[in-house]
Length: 445
View 1 (spheres, helix red, strand yellow):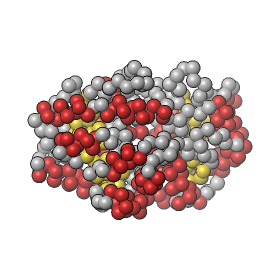
View 2: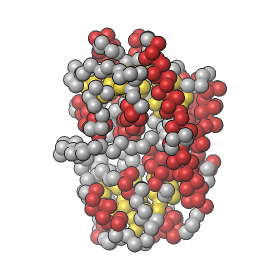
View 3: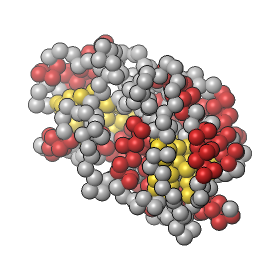
View 4: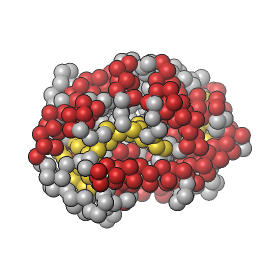
């Protein structure tokens, strides 16, 4: 198998099999977690398909090949997934069940790999919902399967109660499989998610092997030069984006607008957002993802908009350096779809979250941040909903011109998050405990 090299645990380090689900919102946190495990002395084999391999470049630049190796397996064919598609990035969310089914076909190749490995893994870490087949794999190999959740405990507990995710209609058996995982890891922190983790432990999993280890720091590659193939296309290079932000004289005066990797706004929604940005008079950066189908009429910037806002706004078509933008002193608020990764990045950036939940866990995240924490503002709701442009314009203007109580609450959450990952913090301790449990598995084998 391509990229296979024998890994030997160094000292007490355990060898872990990492199986990230093929979607950006899942892969990146998985690799951030893997990085932290490697820093604590563990070793890892990471399952990827050929077109996912480039995602590993940053982490491979930071660690020796004796500690981490890609395990490259062909992406299994599955109708109606187009030939050449290997992840969720270029297909709508309706393809999710098909990607899940295709990925599950890696079970047999992984069994064969495990049997031939002189130092096989002592545990699996994978997505608890969309790689639930890993429970069968773990059982067959007689090792524990640990779920690393792309959603927080607040969302997971809600889904457990309902038996399925109403946004994607994923069946209840996936959630049963999630509960059968030996343990569950959350990219969250106990100060925000602890009560819901307790609910999951007492009412569903019936064990306490739950760890909140977030917010996980993003990987920063060491002396990494990406090839042109690895670069995601963008209409404005990152250095130009940052230079534009540097030129802003007033801190917290820029609104960032971005809707993640799976959301494509229809023409009416695009018109409403563009009109609101124009009417608001604010400085802004708007990330517009290129549709996977050139004939798709979604995510089309209204004609003449960029000319009319030239100087006070940037429209980035394609990939945008979201973490760097949200962390810049000039950015004050963030109009977001409420995906958990983006929500956490907004919290860490210290910006005011303007929430437009659309699907999946977005609604739970908005309820948590808006209704329960009072740390965000809801501006719209629903995948097909169209906001009132005049009202949205006022919200955008107020978000950077007014000291809102939601911003103060958001900054308190940010401090909780920063404290959690410091040495001695709740997430730092949880990660240490997790590594100790994994190392004990290595010792007992």
